Image: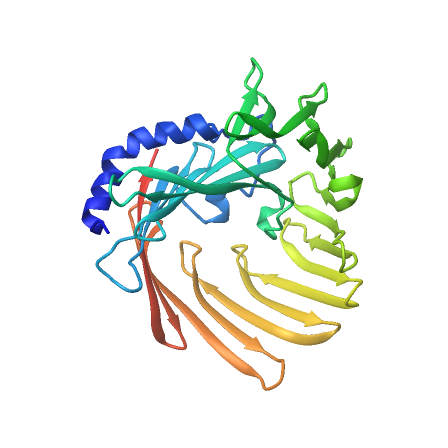
Length: 360
């Protein structure tokens, strides 16, 4: 095997060439166009200050601390992720590219390995994960997965109108978009070998609410989601094939803060209710989780002046009551973003994370 120093030199030498190749094969991660302000941009979700261009997470190999395994995330000028390079093994890495068409997110993941003898990049495989980026502040439920390299299609004005999945010279799947006169996406379909496999229907009312209905193979309904005008989910109904219907209802206060999340699964006849409490800085300082009315877990939180979590006290009530204390200590750059994070569990330092940040 090539030594890691040689591998990292190869990576640096070929970086610009490979980056250009990746953009040609996947398409540049374009910012969402024609969308209302989204309070859940990645800058906001990750509590990043300033106009962050990239973050390099510096990790070491668990077996050999001298081997560095970086993870580099890139953001556009609106705060959305466009690309992530994850060198999670010595000779294998993953490239993630993001495409957006409000309110849908496409995450294209490709895995490559480095040929030991030549040092060349070899494609190992990949898949496309399709989700709605509005709901990502709550859960990361995958809506649809498609495999193979993709090519986005845009019209003359730069609007995304289609996506093509290829297997060599053969088109295996394709997606098409429809828009109303206001430029809002109203219909999204994915065909595999000319058979409809995925269908999103989107409607907008005069109050600004968005209703998204998702259908899978044979027209079976997968999800029914209602979004508030601020982009936060108010009601979600999932239709799993074998486990019955699961409904999620979210309540907010006058400051648009999530105060209650209610989930019900008809198959298991299980109710889960989570309540949230905030301080004057809009930080969640406590929550509690009950299952069918029985207290299951409570959490207490504390933050520093930058809004980063410094303490989490978790109490579990299943069986004997147990308490776990998590503490976090940071070092910051001049903008106010952390560049070193030390994690303690029950006062034992279990992890140190460092990162390099560049700005626009």
